[in-house]
Length: 52
Image 1: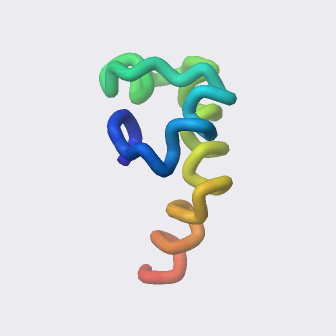
Image 2: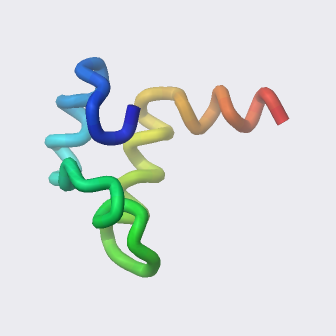
Image 3: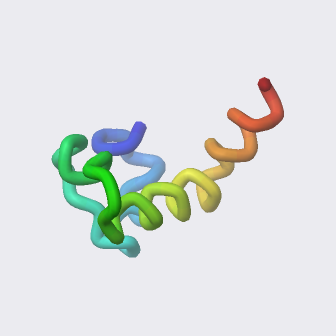
């Protein structure tokens, strides 16, 4: 979903997230907050929180 899902391409591109999962998940980078924004915008963050 993070790097390959076609439904999140626009959100990913808007945040300039790389297509390399290691770069996205690297600690303490601006990509970390961009990833959280992407998950919130696409409702994946909310869905995860509702299931726990």
